[in-house]
Structures are given as structure tokens and as C-alpha cells.
Image (cartoon, rainbow, N blue to C red; front, top):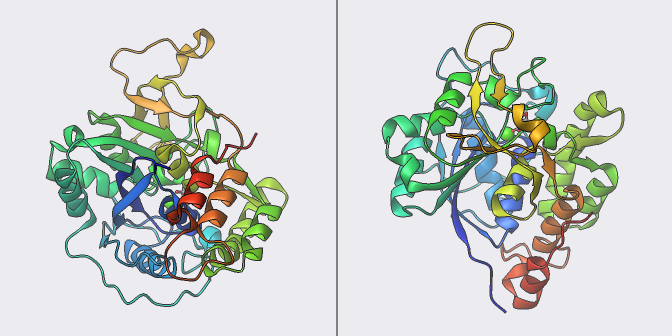
Length: 349
Ligand code: BDR
Ligand code: CA
């Protein structure tokens, strides 16, 4: 049995609840070799996000993965205090994790990203699930970065869907529109995972109960955090459930799920101070012609998924941390039979 090819990944996050799920998904994915993590202010401050990330890595048995502190403030203005009503004061739904022994890696998140890109030329894949401040900073540090990086997957923006922080803007982009504009303007392959697909990828209470029932500390902690997240999303969906923003971006990045409709188009970001600030302006005028090629376009905008995401997410997490697994950081796919099962995981329909 052959293991799938593992790709080096850099994760940039603002570790709140769905970031925690995305991190767990990456750790559980045999296709992802997570080489470094940078944090940025968004759901919580970059420092609190780093604390959460270190603690989650220790809980999951991956304390060796380096975590670097990134930008506290966006390019323009100052960090506005995060979203405690969505993610809790501590960013992870008031779940108390054991404090990790590991300390922050030296240097900034942007410096870590540039270093990893040079260590893995043409191979490094970026998954950005918070505001894009660190990624834009890395582009300024090294203008060669786009040539060195294989691709960038971004959770953010809204194409046809409404925004979630203003009528037209999504939180990750709205928290630093100038940085987002720089990232979309760079010459690299970007996959944008906008609210159009993340708001329709819903995790239900039955899925949360499956995580809790596993009896393993990792899915248990995630299930507990989701209890907080569900209470916020009840105001959006009218029932206990939640959208799955960041884990869906992680799954699309590693190929655990695939897109059914994802045209490659130009994307601009509104950086004015008007009501459109933070809007992702995706050129979707080709909609009625099945999106003909747009010369110069380089952003793949995911508009529809090929199947359902939530059952896949639960299955991947429970395969990595089943109830019988000791808390030693060796996910089930480390043994070849389990690996064979996980590699064949279907995307449920
Ligand atoms: C995005 O904003 C944050 O609250 C989430 O973690 C996600 O990255 C959704 O708009
Ligand atoms: Ca996030």
C-alpha cells in the first residue's frame, strides 16, 4: 500500500473555533505535511491565536510543529478586538486546554513563510484562513515569493453570496482589505473559498455528537468548542448547527473534497472607505456562458462543491483520533490498513 504524496504546507490562521477544526483536519490528512504555522489577529489577537494553536498542537500530539507570531494590526488602522460573540473570549469557545510546553518560534510569521518557501522551492502550499496581513507582509519581504510557492488557498470573500460582516464583505477580507488586495494582485495561483460554499457546508448537531461520542480528547475538545459556535449560528440558521468555513478550505487545499464549479476569474478587493469596503469583486460575468477563459485571470473561485462536506470532515477526524487510539499523536492512518481506508474516503453525497 502506498501513502499519498505529502505536500509541505504553511498555515496562516487566527485560531478561533473553525480554525481549530481546519488545523485538526490538516494534521489528520496524509496529503498534508504541515511545516509551519503563523498567526494573525482576526477572531482573536495574533498572540491569543498563537496560544490556542500551540495548545491544540500539544493536545493533538504535534507539538513539534513551529508556530510564529504574526501581525497584530492590519495594514491600515488597528485590530478591533476580534469576534468573542462568535468564538468566545478565548477564541475556542471558552474550552480550557492544557497550556503547551512549546514556545513560539523565533521571527515573525511572514519571515517563517518566506523561509519555508525557500526551503521547498516550487512545492510549498499556503493555506490562509485568517486576514491576509502576514501573507501580504511576506510578499513585501520577498517579491520572489509567488515564484517559489506552489499555490495559495484562501478562505474568504463572497462571490454571489452576501457578506457576513457587512452586507457585502466577509470577515477575513474586511479585517485587512489592503493586504487582501496585495495578495490577489500577486502573480500566483490562488483558490478562493468564499461564503458561497462555506455557508452551505453545514455541520449539524448529529455530527457534533459523533465527535463527542468518540471519547478521544481531540474530537472531544472540538465538539465542545462547536457547542459555542452552534449558539452563534443558531441566529443565522434557526437551529443548532454551524457553517464550516476554514475546514472546508483545508479540505479543498489537500484535495479531500473537490469543487464542481470553480471558474478562474479576476478578483479585486474594495479598499475604499465606502459601504463596499472589503468586498471581493469577482468577475463572474461569464456565468451564462459556462465561464469562458478570462485572459490574465489567476484566481479559482469555488462556487459549488462536488458532494457534501460535513460527513467527510467528521470521518477524517474520527479516523485520525478514534476512541481506542492512545493520546500519542500517532493518527490511525499511520498503520497501513487504516491508511488504506482513509485514502479511499469517499466524499459523501
Ligand atoms: C472567517 O472569519 C473567521 O471568523 C472564521 O474563522 C473564518 O476564517 C469566516 O468569515
Ligand atoms: Ca479563521
